[in-house]
Image 1 (cartoon, rainbow, N blue to C red):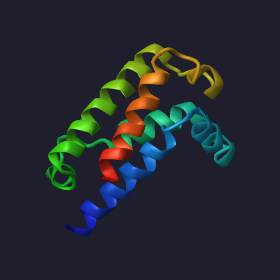
Image 2: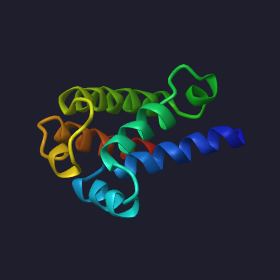
Image 3: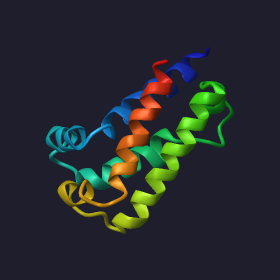
Image 4: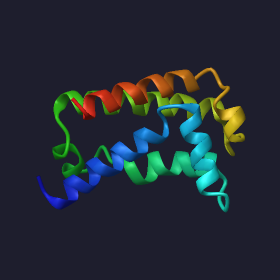
Length: 115
């Protein structure tokens, strides 16, 4: 595995950790008080972490992991649609109906990555 692939895995793992619970995103908000955390969370996933067209990204994960990543991405897309643009506060974000799907799929993704 190349250094880039290792970095892609590490980045995806740390990003999935952010979405594993409402408390984790609340903690993220505390850690980055100078930015609007909901926007930063969406950018972190869609702009910085999920790169499905990259050969290096695909090579960094097993087929089982890629399936879990795709499922998590679908739940993030649902959350993004429900949240709107700009997204609401963290408290409102984690109260949206699609948040439960994101949280569940983040935990499934973490399980696949740590298997």
